[in-house]
Amino acid sequence: MNRKELITQIFTKKSFLSVGLDSDPVKIPQHLKDLEDPVFTFNKAIIEATLDHCVAYKPNIAFYESQGAGGWDCLKKTLELIPKSHFTIADAKRGDIGNTSHQYAKTFFHTYDFDAVTVAPYMGIDSVSPFLEYENKWVILLGLTSNKGSQDFQFIKDEKTGKYLFELVLERASKWGNPDNLMFVIGATHPKHIEGIRKIIPDSFLLIPGVGAQGGDLQSIMKYGMNEDGGMLINSSRGVIFKENGPDFAKAAGEAAQVLSEEMSMAFVGQGE
Amino acid sequence: MNRKELITQIFTKKSFLSVGLDSDPVKIPQHLKDLEDPVFTFNKAIIEATLDHCVAYKPNIAFYESQGAGGWDCLKKTLELIPKSHFTIADAKRGDIGNTSHQYAKTFFHTYDFDAVTVAPYMGIDSVSPFLEYENKWVILLGLTSNKGSQDFQFIKDEKTGKYLFELVLERASKWGNPDNLMFVIGATHPKHIEGIRKIIPDSFLLIPGVGAQGGDLQSIMKYGMNEDGGMLINSSRGVIFKENGPDFAKAAGEAAQVLSEEMSMAFVGQGE
Image (cartoon, rainbow over all chains, first blue to last red; front, side):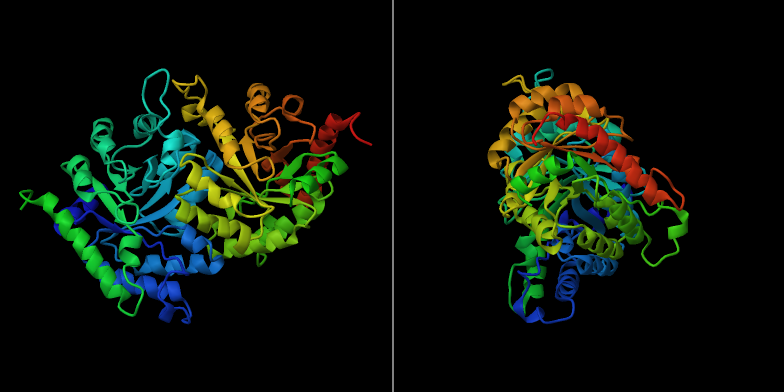
């Protein structure tokens, strides 16, 4: 999916919502667990229930990979189920020397036909560039993450420029790609930094995880993060897909997605039409 | 495998050699390509030919993952082929929020029974700790990598301490684990830094990639990197496994491994016995 199509989806639905398919086999409802492929059945129901309220799906690859080869089959079937109208993100946080990053790009853009893959920046330009060679595909590079450990290294201040490591990542990496093929992960748990981040990368899309289970505040994120193209995908995983654990799990997920989507639609008041 | 067993292997064989099973399906010999599982057949021959000269095997996961579910089956079969005398490293460079890193740890230590997995440090402590909870399993954390892009962020100098980012990674992360469950990746392309690195982490094992195809110099690495426990695994991938592309590929790989191992044995002259 290209940038223009993504923007159209966001403005049509008045939603930034990405639903995180972190479908931990241990956490899915008990009544599904005896089925042939419980996670696939779970994902199918979740996708059908949330489709109208979100613009993207983001399976976190760890939850599939940990199931071995069968987990990758389930991932493939899940991906095939998502309509082309929705942006698909492989949350994989890969990154290696160029030779190897080429293989990871092949995994997520060719073997599996995702629109985007999350990539870790530590190894620098040649770990990221191979992913940028695919047309209409996206790198989503870790900038400022939502977890406690984001404090360990991402806020190291560069002696030369006085900038934080995560700011240098945004600044330098934004020159490796462009706003048509490169987004950044900015955790919802750092709303006060989003204003400053928008000055470094005004046009780039941000993928914002950490709303819900991790405690990020939706209103401040939209206030500081939105740009004239929308410019954001806001992800909720556990807060949507594990809202309820009984037979009505999918209905509850649909409702949770709708609540988030309606809150997001406030940001579009007075825009467009 | 625990630290003591690893040290015994190294001193018995007088070798630090890890063979990188970066078995790119495109690059394996033509005559294998029509077989049912060409990569597995290739790996089997390479392992048999190199077994006596190395102490570890390091499949880079990207080359398996890019083949979809079948690639993961091949990885599993390959791993089962490696005798317990050899240390096994999943070169995966994973790392995510705690909840997700738990799943990645499950992948490589439970679903697949590797001794160690490489992990990326950008997301900090909670992205690394879940891997450290497994007994007799190892995290190998990226410190200073062998690629060109290592210049982009790893040499950012912290305003407060005057230390490089990679030095802070070594310093801080070495407190999250200990030399019995945590090693560091230090690229062979930075031999002049290895002396300084040994001052920060004198007791930790180093996994040193980049010898051979990437141009690292073995003698200086051993001079500065070795400690009284050996303290290193030195990896060669393409320089061993793709030494020859014809019917004698395995023999050539065995010879390449032997040459490296014999060069490494020089470091043990006058030690032990």
